[in-house]
Length: 227
Image (cartoon, rainbow, N blue to C red; front, side, top):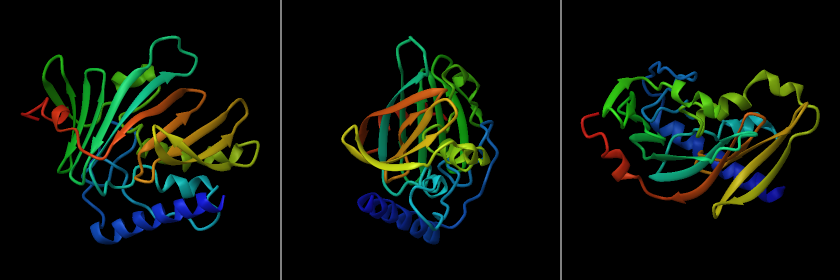
């Protein structure tokens, strides 16, 4: 627990330092359920709540925090109980750009401009339209900001047992996890120290990090040169 608290404290300090230097960015209103507040399509850095690291709000502040270096994460996504093969998703970002690729959909944010692009038509529309992902029980911001919103929800107060904080190695990366007991299942949320999702297991969906690279995926980004 001491090691976990130390890791979370380091990540928290980085989030708050980033907020001090960058300040609040111009906001926009995409089609997704969570309105971002900076140029990478995230909900913006927030201060970690004082108290024990087992507080969901403390971990919530880490999810979706602003990128401080290039990174690319690959995930497998499967609705809970589904027998279909997992869907692969790739999230790549740096300090100026965000890209989320799922199936033939690419969500892109650059200079505060959110777009939803389709490979089949090579066309893009403004906003982050999550409707094509509804069958996966996720939204365009599943990789962080949407998790922050879940952990800040008042409904977590209805949990039936104490929240447990642990550390885990996921795809070779150290992550911080919390288990939130509920009436039917225990929800598990894991974050990388950079603010990206590492694992999500709930009654609705299972998302698992399968690989991580400290670089931006320029090849995928170039798929829409006119975006």
